[in-house]
Length: 514
Image (cartoon, rainbow, N blue to C red; front, side, top):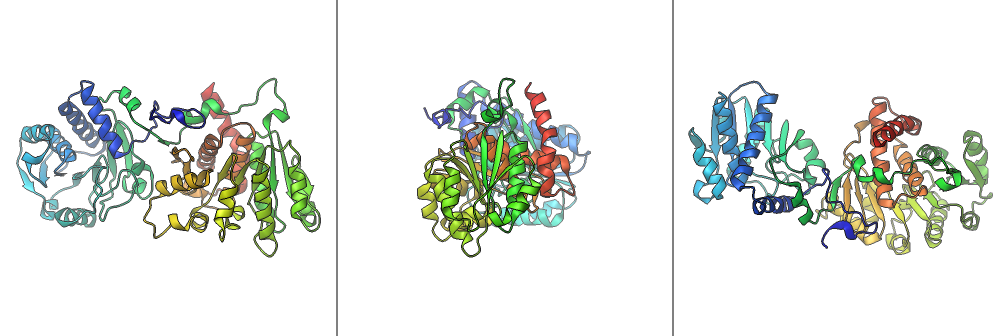
């Protein structure tokens, strides 16, 4: 089978409304719909009608310029123009291409247009109060140039509102990258399924509000596609969420061990609190003896284990020998000064050697920046790496600037190379699995850009791992919860708020599931 049902956890990602289709997969879906008996002419009509309806719902009647390109996106443009004309809108249609070189269905809709059309020119913006961008679709892979560049540049300078068909012209539907020139849309209308480029920055910004419309493509066509990219939603992982059971006890819910640093004590305490709140049965902190009073006095329900005055590697390894710990977190506040760096590296390698599930964040990643291959070769068991872009660049310099690779590709390749789940943070956090699957998280608000938020995320992931979730879905669920809690808190959020606000979100989630 070419479906992701062959992945490690046997999960089929295909039959889901949150599947993301690359432009190539969308073309396959269109073709499969035609084979299934839905005429291409009808699909194009439905797409154009959906856009025209969305325009009428959002804007009052006004002079509109419809820019139609040479492909099927241009065919949609002709349908939109005709629909708006029939509803009394003053429409100017600017066409770039040749009618006789369009697909049969696009030619048919072009001929059904009852008005005149003009060759694309910035002069046509005069008098327009709305622009419909139907020049190029999501499959464009070359830089915008020539008259199309000049036209889009003029649209940007005009400041007019734009409604984009499928994607704003010049936006790569897979990567979310701008191909030379893009006029930011106020509204983008797409069809059947979203594309990765709608959700990855800067595509997410350039699309404006995104409206997904049903145009009659049967759901059954998804079964023929090798779908491995999804938008992060509860439906993906809710059946695996480890709710406490009536006949369970704390040992059933796992035991998280967190490596605490000597000087920056807040980070690992944030992770510990987060692991508790998300449901880990027990949480322990292994900390330098000199810092033990700070940790012990502030963590009432966390066990704090002193590592000795020298915080030796052997002391941490002795703690690791306790088989009750099923997940280890290393990195938050671990320290990189002096001998701290070597201790952190040895703690990570010791954890990986004993085969414990682990979450490696912050200092645990940076400690290996000079020899990342040492870390990668040691990963054999369940492991989640949670870098931000700076940490990612230090671990994977060949995948960072100026590699030219987009964020989705970089995260997926990093997961493949390391054998770990890679959670690449950002407004468009990517969770990538070594087997090729990826999930894009979309609910993170700007308020999460604050110190300590990543430490909380690491704790959420660890707590879910401890309770039995697989690394891929634990990371996805944790990222969603992280964003959802932040949205609930809103302006003024600090990292300390996140764990304590989690129960309200979990209560709603549980009610939804029940």
